[in-house]
Amino acid sequence: MSEEHVLVVPAEFIESIGPLEGFEVDVDRFLQPILASDQLSYRPRSVMETDPSFKQLIPYVVMQWTDPQDGLARVFTYTRGGGSGETRLHAKRSIGVGGHISSEDSQGAEDPYTTGMRRELDEEVSIDCRYVDQREGLLYDPSNDVGKVHLGVVHRFVLEGPQVSSNEEELAEGEFLTVAELRQQFEGLETWSQLCLDALFPQS
Image 1 (tube, helix red, strand yellow):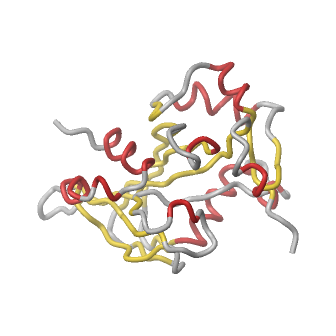
Image 2: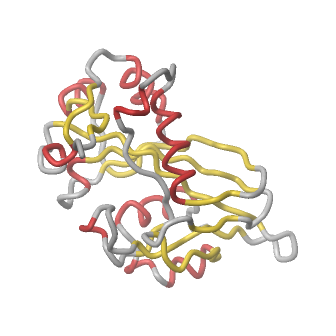
């Protein structure tokens, strides 16, 4: 079985646009030139996981639903299992669903990024309601080995209902929790989820 090749962009190219760390709300300033550049390439995932001179582009989808009975936003959350995914995040709680853009996503596709995002979502969850996709920001966290080699693109899916279920064992204990409940579990969340929670649902 041939190794997966994933979509990456040189760190130098990102740095040429401007400084980026944490949650960056000006997503188009960075993402439009990245996706339009000739600097994108597909490289072996095993090599890229330990090479911070390249950043792997990762769609990171946060799904929220507002209960009309109490008006409170609820966010889909799950525990990362120890399957074939990123083992360095095993047993962490997450509010983001998504994964790598593979070279297979570029075959016959005008927009490999969106094609890859849809493929990852379909593999990981079933969404059985209508929703609006809002691109909210970028994530870069160089404080740990996982964060150093990934660049997250945050999408907020505003769902009409809570009809979301996990398709993979790697997404265990999937459920919708209020923002207050997630804040009580804050220390157990992976870093990207902590950054998203603070940026997308700021405390008043």
